[in-house]
Image 1: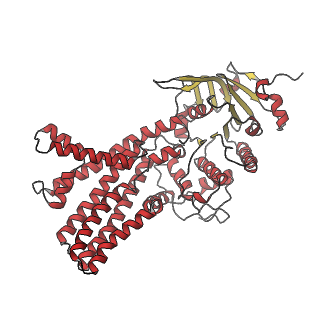
Image 2: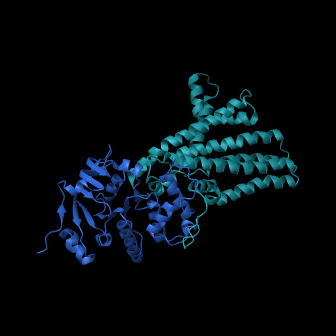
Image 3: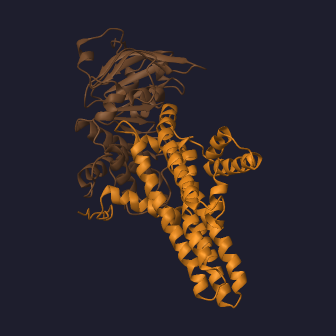
Length: 257
Length: 257
């Protein structure tokens, strides 16, 4: 009999303390006077260079978790740190790459302009007297941009725009990158290419947290899957065999369907 | 520094230069038809004067100046913040650093430069009208050279403030403010007292503009100019202050709407 690979994390193990992202009884939800909502509570740690697939049904709180991790939304209770700092402090000082689920790049802008703006936004206060070659070159390479960046956005396909946006997210040279449904709108070939790029980024030491409601997609590239379901997070460590069969074998019964 | 592969050649400019170029060219790139209409409108008085209708040319020149001041005040600045909030672009600008204020302030200043540049072209065309036989007194030309840039800059600063509040219909909000200001100012005519003076300073300075152009309001053009400049500074400060709050609110909401 195969041991049940699921593990509901309720304690703080030594690994938790060593993580880039550390959550201790972190309750994620909507903090508002009119309609506050608690979505889920989690405890766990994410070590550098890992790919975490944050999986759950629509409305489970995946995007809210990413916003909380980026320091845009407050935590309801518990603690959540990134690099030992609050998420907003970490973002302010180190930068966090963010690829939102839906966005619309300005039609008339060129890729170079958007990358330059990303660079300037991430480094306001600098003198910026020379072309920002290093940061942008690295971002272009990591995002797999292989199309002319001097053409306007409206001439780019969806896949090209997605890669350009990923490059924009990588311009601040972040060690932590949050991607919200990055495969939406991409064809199967582009999805496979994106997964390869994400794997390469992780190998280079970048920590990636990827939200998706498609287990079979991003699950194939992840090291760990955080299943958000019914207010709880089940953490599954995914091992070597990256086939769909192996992935499904590790999922809780309810998720195999 | 160039990147000579399929991605095209990067412009030899710094990120700051790229930002200024993008904002300075905002009007021709975002509203080319409107710019073409303005150019044509600016040429019409010249052609009318050349055709031997000096009085008609003078009337047209005055109308084009008024039209240009309003259009150049409203159009270039429209959506500078609100459009990027709704498109989810602000998520890319907030990946590092504590605030997007400085980033948007720099872009605002660059776009005000674009407004001034477009106004200068328009005024150059109008100044040429008396040179080709139009019946426009040089006193009127001098008044227009003072009034048109100030009105355009003031309208642009109001649109910036409205846009920074996250109002997607920032131009409509500005026009509503002008209408309400006009109605209130009309009702306040003849009322003396400190409270009415304070109320007048909050309204769009129709009286000040009239004083600058016609030389009225106790013949104190310096005071009228100071009122306009004060309002430009005040609206710019409002925009600068509220942009961070609107961005935070938007970032806490998530993806593009």
